[in-house]
Amino acid sequence: MAVQSSVQTSVESVRKWHSLAERRRRHFVELYRSERWKHYYTEEAFRSQMREVIQNVELWEQVLHRTAGVSTRAPQA
Image 1 (cartoon, rainbow, N blue to C red):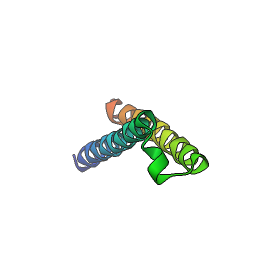
Image 2 (cartoon, one colour):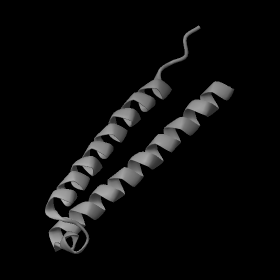
Image 3 (tube, helix red, strand yellow):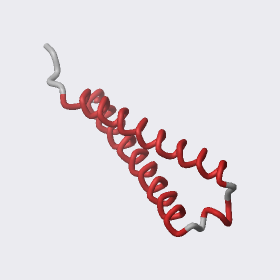
């Protein structure tokens, strides 16, 4: 039972990190659309940050799929 609880907590944690990464991505998209990024970044720095943000979201999506896949498997006897 403790293993299932640990896996459940892990899945919840991964979902929260994925959600945070998505919110950060949406924030950067909004900065881009409004052109407010020009107040805070050079063009090259903003592009670099945007790439990092996108890669972060993709990474958490992969982790979420792997973690969710582990938690949905039937226990083996």
